[in-house]
Amino acid sequence: MPVKRAPPFPPEVKKAGTPGWFSLQLRHWRKERGLTQEAMSFAAELSTRHLSFLESGKARPSEEMIHRLLSVLDVPLEERNRLLAAEGFDAVYPEAGAIPSRAEGSLDLMFQNHEPFPMVVLSGSSMVLRANRAAREVFRAFSLEPNLLETPFDMVSLVLDPRLTRPYLPEFEDIALHVVHRLVHMALERPRNPIPRRLMDRALRFPGIAELWASRGREFHPEPATHVHLCRGGLELRFDTVMTMLSEPLEPRLQGMFIETYYPADETTRRNCQILADRSEERETQEV
Image 1: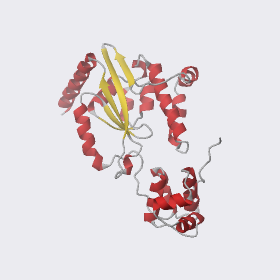
Image 2: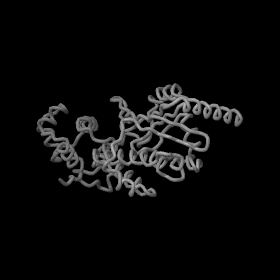
Image 3: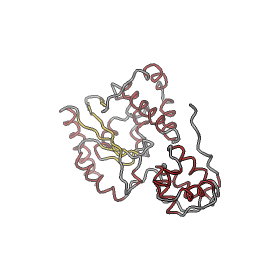
Image 4: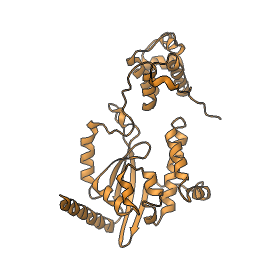
């Protein structure tokens, strides 16, 4: 069954209100969610007549009404900004990648308590928004060209790019399959969100990945936790990693962010992580 496309986004919408476009989008998202006008009006606490007028363009919504309707329809945050702009209101949702200040304290505590083992916060596009000291040290120690980590990077590149951790992953093919499998399912689950599709296409362009997925992707069934084995010279680490989606009704900016937590799989990893942590502290002391 072909996927229906949302009405095209008019290019002038960022400069001024765009009459009529909000009505098209409102009707599109209601039908996408499988709601009748009666069900939608009940959930949003307005009359069916008022909703009908909003969808036909006979009535213009207030800013509060836009927030209420889009919340009921669970419209993605970036799309909410566009709809607000279309009606002449300011965008209120920060760009993807901004960690709310109210979440910083909790993250600080989580990061500190998880040392000397890695923990990172990822955006919905897999960008590393924040990493504890252990994660920074491990990524640096197991990257062929660690200088590439001095600029913003994403986890897809960290694993699949031959210049980063890929040469030091003895079980690289299984890790690569896990990464692509996750991106494929994200793209299928969110057909209107272009980010997973772009990430998947980029992942398949790394050397050998398209061929690997074509030969083994159909039979691959990932475990709930990913096992990561890193080996470089005499240094070896084994982790079980778990991805947790962040969600907070009162802080919608957390929507789509993940925490990836690395747990040591053996005593050798515990010792080596502590060695890396000691090296990091010593280096920081010398720099001061």
